[in-house]
Image (cartoon, rainbow, N blue to C red; front, top):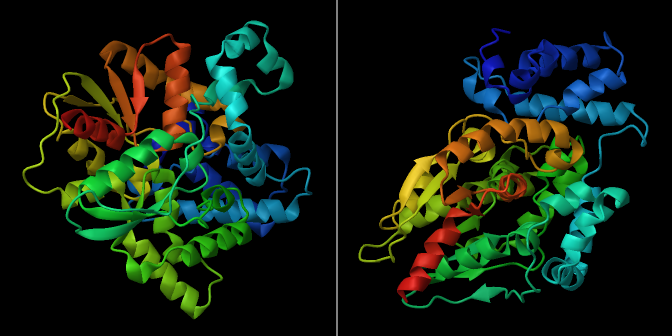
Length: 402
C-alpha cells in the first residue's frame, strides 16, 4: 500500500489514475473477491488493462506477488462472467497462428507479389477487420522443414532441447534457425521435440489456469530431461512461463518434481551462449550501431537482462547502446497489442521517439511479441531500422566468417 510501484506501472504512467495502478488494482481485486464491489464492465476493464509486465514486483519493498494476484483475479472474473463477457480466450490467437501456418504459402505470395500493397491502398484489411493482424504480421518465408535433431558441426560438448512454443516456427523462424546454427557450432546437439506446444502464458494471464496447466504438462512430457543438459528458449515471454512451471498448482507429486527440474533446466539463449562461449572463436566485424531492448519478461521475471548485451558485445566493431525507457513495457505483452491496440501504441510511442533521435541501424529484442510490435511501429514511422533477435546477429557474423 506504499505506492512505490506506481511510477513503474506503464498504465498508471499513461492515465495517471489510481484505478490503473498496481495499488489501485489490488484494492479492486480485494473488493471484488470479498463481494464489496460488483463485477462491472468498468472494473473488468481496469483489471484487463494490466499488461502483467510485473515491473511493480521489482519495485515492491514488501515482495507482493502481484503476478499471482492478477492471474487469480482474472480467474475469478471468468468464473463469474458469462462466456460472452469473459476475457478473450487465448485459443483465438492460437487458432489464428494455426491458420497462419496453413496459409503461409498464400500469405508469402500476398506479401511478395505486390498484392499486399494493393490491398492496403484499397483499405481491404480495415474493411475485413484484420488491419491490426495484417499490420503486425512479419515477412513470412516459405515453409521450412524442421528436424527433431540437429547434430554438432565439430566436437560435441553436450545436448540441449530447444523450446519453440506456438510462435517460434511460425513468426520467429530466423531467430530459431540462428539459435540452432549457434548451438551446433558451439558443440551442442539440438533436440526439438515435435509434441511441444504453447507454453501456456496467455492462458495463465487470461484467467484460464486449467488450460495453462494442460499445456504445461504436455511440454513436461515432451522433453526427455535426463538426456539434456539444458532447455533453451529464444522468446523470453515463453521463458518466463517455463521458469515458473515449478510454481504451478494442481500437480501431483511426480508432476511437481518434474516441473521443478524442468524450470531449473530452462535457460535464455543469450545467457546460455555467453556462459559456454569457448576461447578462440572469432566473429566477422559489424560496423553498425545496435540499440538493445530489454523485454519485461527478461527484466522483471527472469532477471537475466545481461545476456543480450553480453552476446552482442562479442561482435567486433559493433556499437551496443541501451534503448532509453527500457524500464517501461513497450505495450506488446503477448496478445495485449491485439486486444488493446490504442494503449499498446501509446506505450511504444516514447520508445519510438527515442529511436528516431538515436537512429541506430538495428534494434534487438529477445522476445517475439516485442519484436513484432517494434517492427510494425518502426515501419509505420518510415524508419529504415532493422529489428532482430540478438542471436540472429551473432549467427550472421559466424556465417560471414565461414
